[in-house]
Length: 332
Image (cartoon, rainbow, N blue to C red; front, side, top):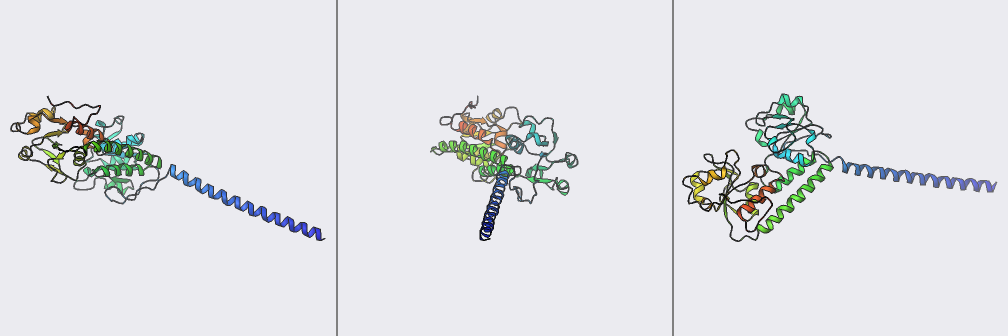
């Protein structure tokens, strides 16, 4: 009897150990499964932005299969992310800067046909501040529950990088990783140019035209283009002013820039037009034929491709210390 009781007790102890071991294994598997789910989240889901780049509250869909994007700069970023196959609507300017979208529905970004856009059933709509003049042209889409995101034109290179990250965060972690790689490479190229620019002791005075006469336009501080001039070691002749500015012909001549850069692409020969302006003969840049065209798309669209414009600007202003594959030829 005693032996049976001992045997019973022994079996109870073994059973208790087995149950405890089983519970430990179940708990461990639960923890591993939870970790696995976390890892899965890292490769897929991300914390979606709660506000757009203008500060407007937004609710980004968990899954995005259809994109409407009404800005060439944003569409170039989407292209670099490999997301063009999701784009169902674009602005009329984008085909000039992004290939492969000719068959996609096109809309005037200033007066978009929201009814036709709605028929395409986009999950998300990207726009810029340019579309917002006197009212909100996308109000009807918002009322339908479509996520409309505003990304104003960036005023600095840091803001451009933040835009790229923001767009990526609207999608998934794989896209966020691509954004990180793009920004890392982007910054590395900027750093290379800045390292050379920091060695310039005698800074050249530069005027950068973004619109020609009779409606001459340039920029002051608080713009990414002004920052780019600083990076290459140059001085913006209108650097004491703010943002995008109209310029009188008298002020431009009085500024007497050493170099004139132009991104004007709506006249046949922007460089020749500047060199031939009556009354500009004694402006140093004109007298010495230091007038150069800078790629319009690269210099006007705020994304990672401004690096091409930065290289062109650097080589145009300081050909003795900068040299890139896209060689700048002096004005004829």
